[in-house]
Structure formats: C-alpha cells, structure tokens
Length: 70
Image (cartoon, rainbow, N blue to C red; front, top):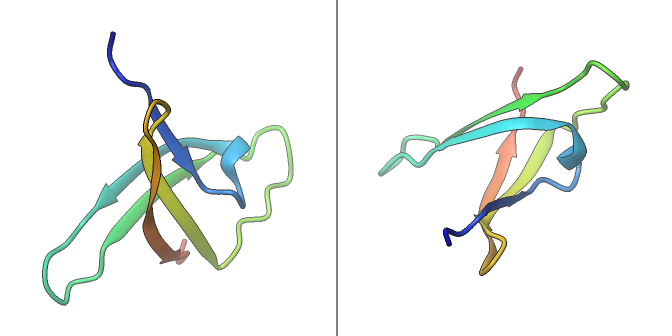
C-alpha cells in the first residue's frame, strides 16, 4: 500500500485545493503555487504562508515561509 501525501499550511489548510512547489537552486527564489477555494467562505490569506509537506505515515517537514504576492 502506498503512502498518502500530507501537507500543513495552518493559516488556510481547509481551503487548499492544490500545492505545487518549485525548489530552485542557488540564489533564485523558490516558488509555491497554492490554489485556494474561495467559494463557500471569506478566506483571509495572510501575507506569508508557512508550508510543510510530507506523508501521513511519516509526517511533514517544513519547506519554508513563502511570501504571498497574488
């Protein structure tokens, strides 16, 4: 049986549809694309998101704090 992906973005976790992280090398900024569902509630997305990724079976690891720009 395969492992199940898990994530943590405490600020908006219940509203996340998908996450795509690009880990750049060197001095280029990493990029996180987070799709949020605004349909049912007024979602207050903060200026920064603390993102952690991993698996339910092994836990999540911090990926970093990302500045929201859109």
